Length: 416
Image (cartoon, rainbow, N blue to C red; front, side, top):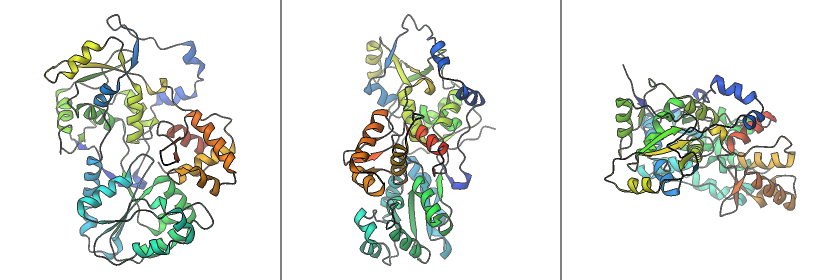
């Protein structure tokens, strides 16, 4: 019997397991990089067109459009159904935790808006350092409406005065009768568990189940079908289709792409090695998967006629997209000789879900010029990037390498 399961579901944090790397991939990582240089990948013949190029933005946004939050919001609402109507006073607080890129703050904010719950943003840096009296007064006000704090990880600083506010907040959360939904970044949760035992003081958090190979094999073609895309994805090494052509599989993808349809997957379908490999490298994080997937897509140089057909909504032609293995992509790498200053900056950025240069200088034993030099160096390596407001963050394409480096060096890391 072929059973379909929810593609998006919430589990408790102890249930989360990073997708394992295939045995072949474990061995490959132990082989030195010169093997690739001695044995370059041989591209198969494709009707006389052996050269590939980057996929144009128009096609990329149809073959791999940005995922929306509709499914993850609906899954969270379903997971919280018992909590919403529970009469037990011991279960008024609920916590959801997610790794970088999980958009947990946006997910709980969307859910709050749909249900007219009160949402309160994080305190400012000045409020945190001053103890946050006014902010806490606003949070602890009695109300029958559920309260949502979408950025718990932004309520502290790793500083001698940076934990007072969140300690007072935790005291209130242990005694309040008001329903509270908290969202927290996984790195902040790891730090607060270590510094304040927040994992003991609050209920066991929920988190999205990891995006394993079986889920990926249903999710990625669902994205491609969102805008009525007509694509065939082929392995650049041997030309084989990455996605199965079984009728019931194709029908499920078409159903998933329909608006309002809860997306489902079947683990009875044999999982392509590529997807098991991709799931393991991305640590089961959907946004990392999505960015790697987009980076992997290529097309033949001679595509003008095919693009014209694709833009014709009446055309039933399928467009071939070639997929590179992720391990052949030019991805950021943390150099082995990375120094303590560089590591401290990246670690502090991760613990605080992004940080400005002045605040980095305030929290770390580094001068403003030292921070600026480190950020410039890390930016050149692709290990950090910055937003328009001056916030520095670790890009998701670099995240697996950065996290692996942190763990190898003995730094505190998250559970994901």
